[in-house]
Length: 221
Ligand SMILES: [Zn+2]
Image (cartoon, rainbow, N blue to C red; front, top):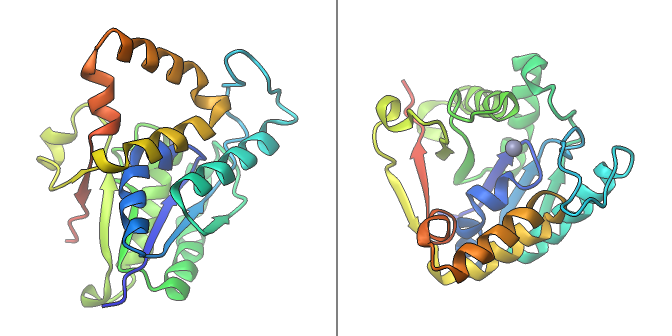
């Protein structure tokens, strides 16, 4: 089967934290990856550490950072959907799903990556997951692409069970680091902290980010 990955996430940097390694591995295999990034994270409160952005220029900065991150991950097909940051939960679910459905019909993905609804910790994350699942549910059961969901709630194992997809990303950890660094306004402080922990040989954060990525395949009912 012809493979094509569709990643649908609301904010620039969601992909770099959660799925950059998986994307890099797919790209190494020559599999096309389309990333639909719904907003520019323009309502974000991080303005760089040290500060270099402000409310007016933040969307422009984050757009450029997103493009840089995509270059780092070798994503050629970036779609910026221009939805409004921190408002996705108020979108009409049918209209929201229509937009995702359009993408799915065009791309015919073999794999979709998004947030697990109600396990995204942020209203935009949950709204995105709900809309993506709603769009895929419109397809007949045997035509639905495999769907990997990121779950980041504390009670995720209690509710969803163990993650059933565990991807070893160590060989592309460098790509993930570059992608994260590209989102400079959001991650510069974190990267500094990480480098310090690395020097102190605190392996915790390194293994969380750079050794594996885990997903829950969506359970259709
Ligand atoms: Zn986010």
